[in-house]
Image (tube, rainbow, N blue to C red; front, side):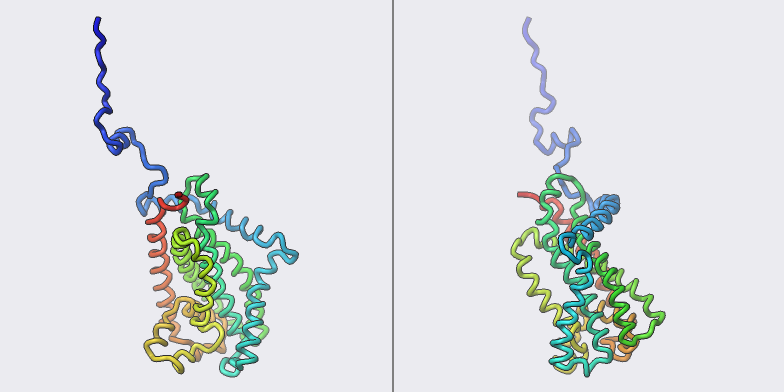
Length: 300
């Protein structure tokens, strides 16, 4: 009896058609944006636990341990005070220059360290990325959460400095919480941008210290912001006054320093509007930009 050939139902189908028939999906493919955000939210406990572990282990090998989280910005502030406050005599132009300077240094370092560490958020975790399947945006968010926890500990010292230098406690101190929320959202978005760029350009990490130092000088951390209007064309001063770190620093000074109220770079309402603008634009824009590269991370 002759054998009867059985037709192969898959013959003639392309790989895409076969994948569709059997419900197969590309490993690590990028999900829709809303689904990606939902998955990321499901990993919120992982991000908080991972960030706490990072904070605990970051300085565990040093004798002073986590005290360096406070000593580092204090040391920077002391050096800047010697150069700009004593040698260049900027303290004569600013009431309570010590509190003014320390507020700027502490707030700027929150963005600075988040950006610099975010540059290697992908390249520094390739083993984790290749071993586990999870939304890669969890990594730059964790970087920002680590820096936020370190800042919150430093804020206790900053509050003590502000009080010690003669500033009174006012109801405006409560505004430091929404200010830090806006800056954190901004930092998350910017860290995501830097994480994706850093995964493509490995030398970016070497360039960032120079970029951040330039940004420091353009953010009114070390000298009166009024110098922008005195020494720059109006259009250049206006551009610098939109500078995100400067906006957040001025909001912090508005919240903590009673002596600085008359010297704000802009009205409080405009500063809050700019802070909200930068948080929304960078937060959403950075998230979308990072999501678009989801399939690239850890490849090759």
